[in-house]
Length: 139
Ligand code: GTP
Ligand code: MG
Image (cartoon, rainbow, N blue to C red; front, side, top):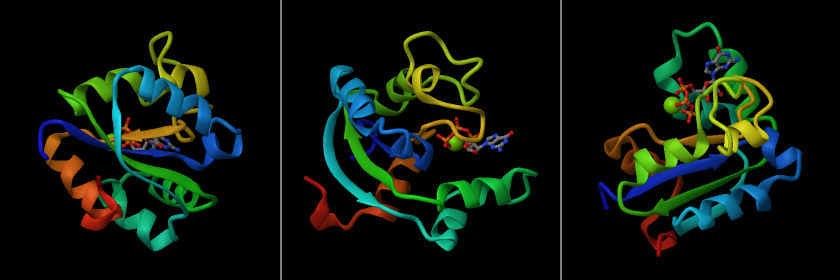
């Protein structure tokens, strides 16, 4: 799978704002195919584990609380050059710096509540996909 998949979450802020459909529309319009998808909610333990790399950062507590406060949509997406293309589609972490037409420019509220997650490497895409989905849920 490596190389042509990425993992995404539509984060609680975007779900609360009613933007699931708008974001999925942008993803499909950009040529990504959905290989797995679920509407779910992270426990604070799961959110903490997922973002463990940021454990020492000052915003870690806030990040874990945010990511576990409401439902999310988790998905595995497929496209050539998936990781890089998806990061381009979602835009910079801080929506104030995100390019016009990107998901975060349109739908993110702040650097913390920024609507969507995208894997940062092929290796992490596979790890994150396996963190959220069993083999039987991927098509
Ligand atoms: P992800 O796709 O969610 O991994 O975002 P990213 O790769 O663009 O950014 P990064 O991995 O550096 O940070 C992970 C997440 O932590 C961000 O998406 C934000 O939700 C949150 N975050 C990052 N920086 C800050 C910050 O300065 N303040 C707060 N409150 N949250 C932050
Ligand atoms: Mg990241």
